[in-house]
Image (cartoon, rainbow, N blue to C red; front, top):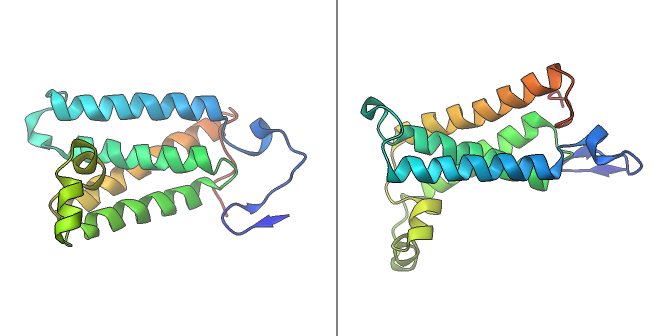
Length: 152
């Protein structure tokens, strides 16, 4: 069977053989989210990095979330989709209609959507997604079950 988002999917394969393991993805997602939220509240990184480590962790969270939902999608496709999502959210910060500003004024809206477009955020997002892709590649090279091959 062919799925446009995941490529070829074989129904009879166990999850561990064909995709990311859900509970491991959920654990990683919770750890990254917690660390990212903590980085906004406390100074976990040297001040020279500013808020960018938190932005990279946000992008890594998006990568993990997409990978968890689409466990059979290739790592490179997850990375592309995560980067596109992060870039779309960042460019959406150029839009300032009253309704979206009221959403951004909430704590969740601020954390999820941000408030101000900053080109350097795009670099931080790329680094966060790259960290997820490299980590998944290392796990795959070590032979541990985590996801499908990187090549499409």
